[in-house]
Length: 313
Image (cartoon, rainbow, N blue to C red; front, side):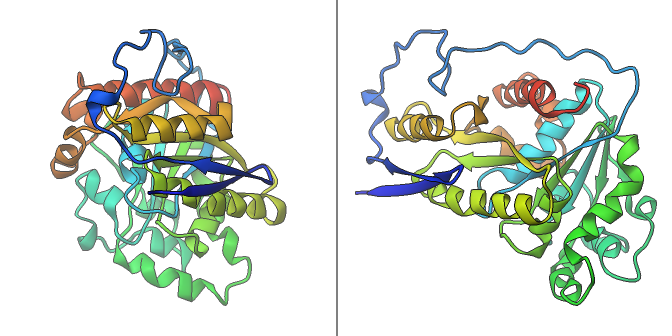
């Protein structure tokens, strides 16, 4: 029914056979407790140590050209969980829809200064756009629909791919991590994010069609690394919207792990009604429902990211 998907990793092609989903009753619910959703043994990451000093920041682009895979949800909740662990975090809303800003309760349509004003001449100072959030240690560079004009206006600018990097540079020493929520496309704004990032975090919905976009995205990452940003690497693939009751989810998970191996985070984000609720509430799940499975999952992801991706973890 679904056929094949071709995923490219490190220049090689892998053909992935994906079969239709099945009823939850067909899933083996008696797997050993020590085996996680990725099929690998659970590897408990210890609580991160407190930091004596902050900065310079590790810049992470949260990127996937497919929409609806949990980029914004993951950026907000990973950022909040990192802040809980004592990291100074800056979130950058690089999507003209402004979902990240709205998800933190910011009335983004009413803002006079946004990321747009950092990118397009005459640029303003970064501190004029920077906002505090209700989460201690978590700051925001907000966005709104004005940003949609930036790609057109940047076309004639010299060094247009480095515009975001120049805007962020003055504040990097204040933070431990910068998370950039990219728009669901591979246009100039996303290239700007990749050009100034150290690593890429790819949220991937645990569905067949999400597999198909990974080849294009990894190809773009490779091109940016070759032409604009030699330090860029794949920080990890985060599987989202996982449903252990369906064999389809388990099968897609197995194929992603088979192709990308250790690049797949052990932490998996399962489907839950809590995430839409937090969007309405305008706050992260770590404060809205701190004991929920979703909050625990993003704290586990934060521990992984600190251990695997951050400078001076």
